[in-house]
Image (tube, rainbow, N blue to C red; front, side, top):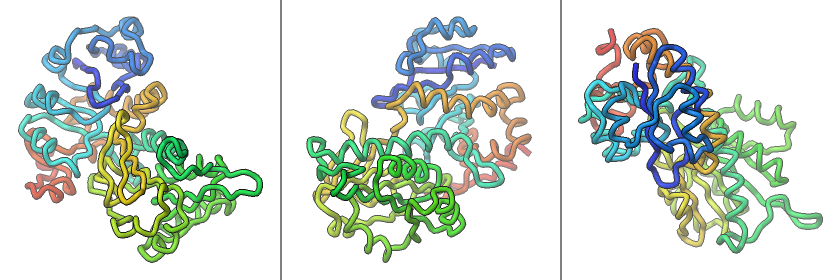
Length: 371
């Protein structure tokens, strides 16, 4: 199979779909890999590393899309990329279709086979291709939150760990999943007072156990949020429901009880956000105010640390990508129920039910296509 790796073109996105080492694994197993010139530079992988791995370097994205049977990316295709997709071509990347009707319509029209990293799901509910970027984003959420709490950056001027005689920052983490756990881990390490809110009692027990009660857990409810938000310096949103929009936990009226200059980092923004007043932002313009509360909604946070992120992502996606390349997409989906859940749009049909429901589109069970 011919594998194509184009340069990512989303605002300040420096990751690349394959590391040179991962590309070499495709080559060793008999596949051809074409990489757009300088696509890896943002992740500190120059072209000569891809050449040494057996890849072919081509000049334009148009050539990558025209020749490749499978496109491996990081972020969702932009409109100019969707226009280059063709019927039957495999697109293997993050999609996040629930909050994005235009992308969904474009992928349907393309006739491509669109497999989303974020909905590949193991029987125990683990999301193996989302997890590494959730780990990065969760840890970054605390870092950027601490940064924007500084007065020159627009925040209240609060130090996360405080100092002797001065209380540390109060951090609320919404969701105790991968994002929330990593955000809380860094916040705790910085010396903040950390509260993790979740609806799963087993998950909260687990977090209490591993951190020996050094992090507070609290059931996620409107009443509890109203009680705790007035003390918050930093709120991190880490809610994720596979294939669906994130629920809105912090509503516009709740901002009125928060301290002016406190910071919200909504990591759930890829799925529409869990803060009513959030909107997607970029690394070049990351923040905005609503009612004196500073909001951060960068939709590709891990793109700021591309060397780490690309390595972590390639580690996770390689196994499934090789299965698709070696066996063809239909057989790969038949063979692996987790990978099958990654199928979102197949040859003009929406095969992931929550995406279809979200956009009022016809849902086609994947089994009707692959047998």
